[in-house]
Length: 300
Ligand code: FAD
Image (cartoon, rainbow, N blue to C red; front, side, top):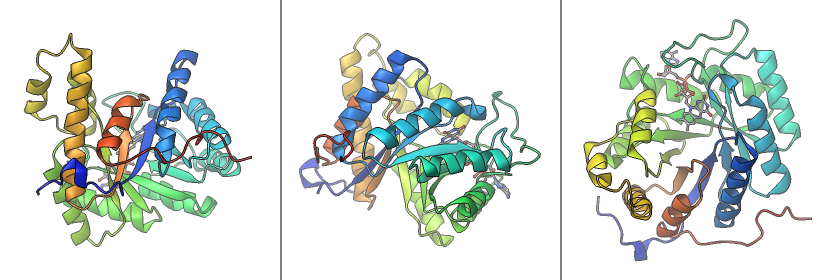
């Protein structure tokens, strides 16, 4: 696909940002400063992840509720089925609803011990589709679910993965957010297969700006994303050049976004890793401009 020149991007892309809950006060400051930088771009929502095995339960709640309390950006809370009964999930979901958190990213989750198999809680949900159906009964949440353009590592086949995505959407989710990927073709093939299976909900690409290939490779191995060989070559020799590394990272991600845009994509979800600058620069290249000052202050 011929990508449009940056000057031709209409600024009509919608963006959302993902954060993880901070572990320390210092990290909380970094996160809050990232939110402050990105908020004026007018994101559709910002989401906060839930650590493996529910390990960040309290911190995820605290972060999401602070966003709900102190900003006017709609917050989304990630929630998984791991180690939780249906009753516990209901309690968490009701607390979110009451705190003004009306959007859940509903996931099966991975077991707390890496490499082990997911086993549902005896009184819990079997997987994400089951969780979506459960949440729907609790309150009229907006629900997003996960999708895997390069396949989930446990998927029996690409078709089974698409069937599972369809089950999640049919159960009441309104959008899928993808695992990160670096090949626009992989995304387009997946979107075509989803459309052929009758999926009409938006499949929002998850964009990971990479500035540390080794770290990303470690993470990608766990979640079924492929890191192309050219990525290593691209960052070769940049270990001692952090500024150049950032520029290369922004360029690669912006190119990916531009090609997705050319293929009709208008919603982008950024894995920010709690740092604003890369995502801000990529959004800028996508034509996004600061919409409003003071997005952090709730209207009185
Ligand atoms: P599911 O949709 O339940 O599917 C899991 C696997 O089982 C798939 O391979 C699916 O094809 C297969 N499957 C399901 N049902 C059936 C069936 N009936 N028959 C055959 N096969 C079936 N993890 C966290 O712990 N915390 C987070 O905050 C978090 N955020 C994420 C955000 C995004 C956007 C993405 C893409 C992933 C996120 N993850 C998170 C990772 C996610 O929890 C893992 O990838 C997990 O292994 C699968 O979760 P899921 O919701 O996709 O599971």
